[in-house]
Each structure stands twice: as C-alpha cells, then as structure tokens.
Length: 194
Image (cartoon, rainbow, N blue to C red; front, side):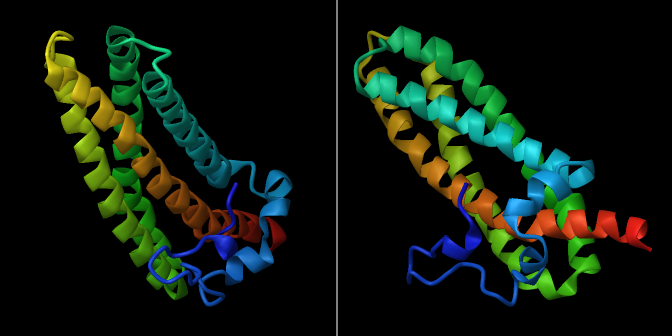
C-alpha cells in the first residue's frame, strides 16, 4: 500500500499531500490502523478500498492475458463485461457517495483538510473521465462481432486503458486513506476517550 508521504505528483515530483494536510496521519499512522481503524466507518471505508483495488487488479490481469494472447477475444469479452460492470458501477457509486455526503461532512468537521478534499474531488473528475472511456469501450465490446477488426481494436484499447485508470485509482485511494481514515478513526475514538 502506498503512503501519501511517498506518493508523488507526476507533474513536478513534489508530494501531493504536504505536512499541512497529513497532521492527522501523524497522530494515527498507517501501522496503527489494523488496531485502531479496523472498525466502524473507517473499517468499512478500508474494506471498500480493498474491494476497489481487487476489482481493478482483476481487470488488469484479464487485460494482460489478452495482450499475452493467453485468452481469445470471445473469452476476453465474456469475462471483461461482467467484471467491468461490477467494478465501474462500484467505483461510480463510491465516488458519488463521497462527493455528495461524506466529503462535505468531513470538510465541515475538519476545515484544515479542505485543500486535500479539493485534490480528491479533482481526482474524481480525472478518474470519472477514465471510467467514461472504459464504459464507451465496454459498450463497443458488448456489441462487436469477433469477425470485425474494430472489435479486436476495442479489446486492445481497453487493455491499454485499464492500467491508466488503475494508476489514477491507486494514487487516489492512497491519498484518500491518508486523509480520511485518521479523521474517521480519531473522531470515533474521541467519544470513548471522553
């Protein structure tokens, strides 16, 4: 799992999240999460991210099988369509819930993290653009005939697009966890400490 302190911004090699946004992570570092953030909303959030990473890995493994010619076009389409539907739907639903409910509440609860939530919202826009591209390719794949050259090109395009989405998603999930998990876990622990 990538820690945000080492996650770099591709444009300038600077950390995406600076110490001004990671002050809660300093109070509750990742190595303490299994004991202190595995329950409640923080635990559910982490489980959701495990599921999103798993779906992405499944799709990227399928894409590699296609590229390595270990899977024919019919087999690729048969496996890719339900995996794409589940993963892209899950991803879209998760982001919608964050954008409409969780992130606004977290901004109010911890205004110092506002810049970080702006970054996460911008990530959502980039990931959503990648998801729309994958959904377009998914529709083409679903309606194509293996006898058409365009059908094969669609599979190639999808195999190239999946890791792009995966890279965006991996960076986003790591950064989101570094902001959100300590916030949720520390707030959940505060009433018990009182």
